[in-house]
Amino acid sequence: MVDEWVDAVGLRRAEYGTHSLRRTKASMIYKASGNLRAIQILLGHTKIENTVRYLGVDIEDALTLAERTEI
Image 1 (cartoon, rainbow, N blue to C red):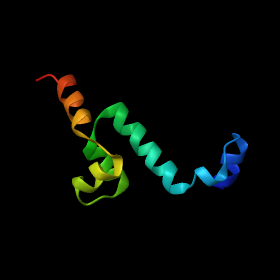
Image 2: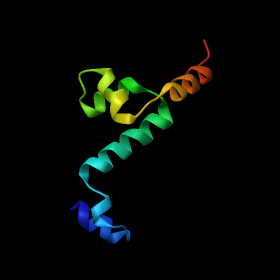
Image 3: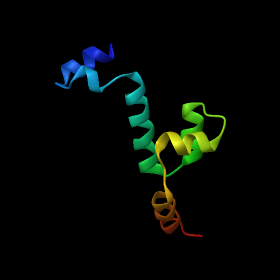
Image 4: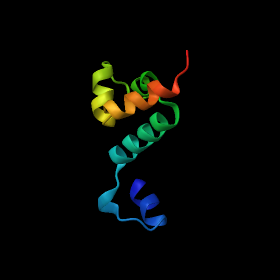
């Protein structure tokens, strides 16, 4: 099914699959919300460290989120 969707939008099948699309959606949600815990739950990860590693979150991302958060 994914191959058909990829073909339909004119992309190369070899570059897209179920896992890469899963990761892309999680990354997009994280960038929009900054909520690592929500992503952890959506992905079914038991440890937040796995989610951080999976998304490739780094210090710059964490600092940006911290600066945007007012208390």
